[in-house]
Image (cartoon, rainbow, N blue to C red; front, top):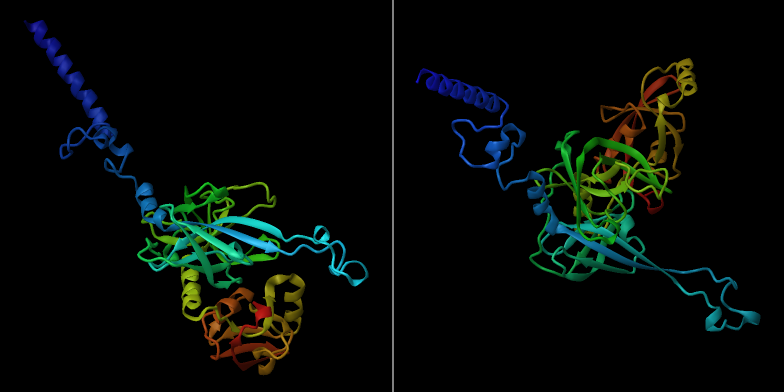
Length: 388
């Protein structure tokens, strides 16, 4: 009898010790847990309740508002026989006339209103004669371009529909490096596809992402962005759109996704969209100078130091004739140090500060020239088409 009691005690103590170890590691539920759930069994290894997945929940909010955009562009092909007048001034027979080249494109867009306004990239719809939009539920519509902004690579297109699902637009100023990033779009014409990563960096500026194309400011993400994702949504973990996917960075166009993608911040995109919807175009304030960082080269800094200026600023290296800067008397080699008491450390500051003003407003620039600092007033104009 004593041996039996001893065996029972050893078994109970051993079982209790094992249970204590498993509980401390998170494999057993605590006293307040509901029995029988997967969360209990996994403990600390799964912080999500049963039936919930934050990525899936966020995706479910965004997905209905993301559309496929198919474009058709007809481009004239130069006639190998010249002007097309043919021999001795007579028209060429049809077989000798060069046909138009038809180009097809497939990309993405984000519905931003229940009456059919859709955000996408300028490079998606620029030059397209036919634009077709396919909703997540399979419905198809013809679309028309409401307006485009080539400088920020944003466009708005419109379809004739009502009571559409539309995206909740977040605040891209609030994102943090390391936040979840969910890319939703139409890569290589597969239809709506979701990829997941993080915000890799914020406020990437002046990025070359193609021949003659620069991104003024972008969110960088490692969520896979491929051909066809352009114009699609970059969302946060709450299912709010924080950016419009626009490009990947690659020195080899055929390399595909390499974990470095870029999205236009949604705060920029929705400001542009508002102007396009209300006015049909985007108006930018224009000063008319081309500037460079004073610290762009050691030789430049040394020259200014020798001539009595030491510090930061933006050096004017060109003034557009007839521009507000020209009318205000700004000159090459002037150094802009402040705009309305806002310090200017370099060329980027000039652009950012001016974009916060409206056309017609007067700005006051502190300018160093030949040993003296002067205050110059300039009335901002609308950016000419050839300067956009």
